[in-house]
Length: 124
Image (tube, rainbow, N blue to C red; front, side, top):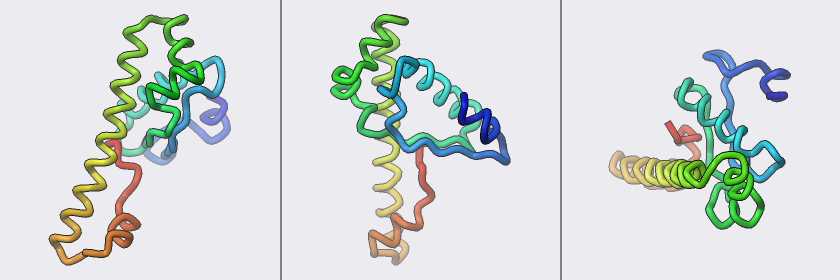
């Protein structure tokens, strides 16, 4: 919330990119995840989220996100969060693969050039 207070709320003119590791950073991780994904749902074309290494089941278990969510909410919240984090990673991977595949089909075989030109983040 402090970030939005300082920089402005997400809008068509105020875009945001969250580059992962947004859970396991304090006692409000569940609410932060909800806030970020709600904004992603409301503003799919100007609010972007990449999954980091903390958005995995093992890290969630080890660093407290899972316990916090079970304590505040329930097991279903943990399962839903896990599904969202997994889908986030899956869609990033698939989109990168398709960009490389179709880039090569159109004469762009240099993988680094394709990945540099790709519009990231990809969870749209």
